[in-house]
Length: 422
Image (cartoon, rainbow, N blue to C red; front, side, top):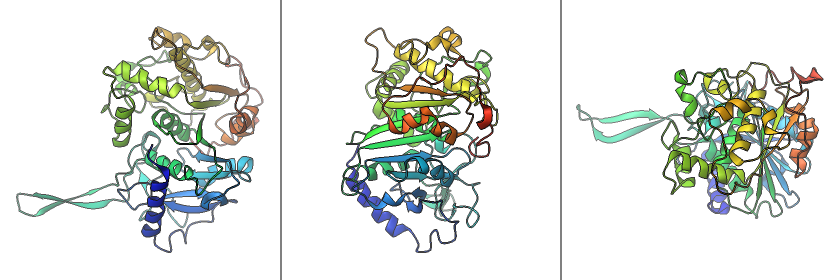
């Protein structure tokens, strides 16, 4: 990764230059403990990303940890700041970036300001998959002449990936002038935000002085490394998209957006076959500190029911997450972490469809952990309150959690969060 200080200097200067003085004046009040700031994460545009931050944002010698919390499909970073702040806010820096869509509530009813803020397409996996923003649009003029001998012009969105925003945030946190004692950063995502954190953990090539932990909570879908799938009812002939990005790591250019394609190519450089590229990416990812937290009552069907997601475990997010844990353990050659892999949903169909250890050589270092929370559904605060959640936020090791064979009990939390992140 490039030196953080240079990018931070550029970022701060561009923020100062790009923002009108009244920016944020007519938006609602930020949640308790937060301030609303605007960053310009991409050099290609002065459009800004709204970010809710705790007081330590401008620098602190006392903090040792920072938490970046990622909202889901309802585009409510203010709410997600409020979810995590009570647990970590007094002693750590909390950052909640907002990836709005062109359908998000506009100021003064919401925080989205269309003329200055980056925004993504409303449909499908857009910002969670690292695609470029589509707004605010700018007019580009071509140097070529048309038949009528006039300059051609077209509108285009900013060339700015949501993942570039994460690169900018990490670059700032890497600045020892601002945070001399900061040593650990937690990237926490729930639902659609978990989709993003899972994929970004696979693509991030950070090599600075900070330790990074990725916490993936109740993801709706993730990226597979091969054609194997866990759902017996999956009709692969009528769902070819399930084998392309963002649902699978295939050869570069297969539906990969600009930033993702470039980073993927750099990470798998030297690997020739599609399988070799996937294996190389998986091996590097396996060594990272990644924790998967799943509520065993996350069995509602309010989220995406497209075939691309259902292929990963059917209609329930819980089963998709169980299956992904079994799948990645099969690739790594791990059998019982924390429970026998054969006990997880989809194991049989995964092995029948070709999921197995990636090579006959030495197994990759597998540093991932998983914990199942009993009685909690699609509810990030419920997960964070649990023993699994507290360990992910503050400890090195997760407890065993609930057995994947157990039915959920204590369903008082089952309807929490339904309006938050489908």
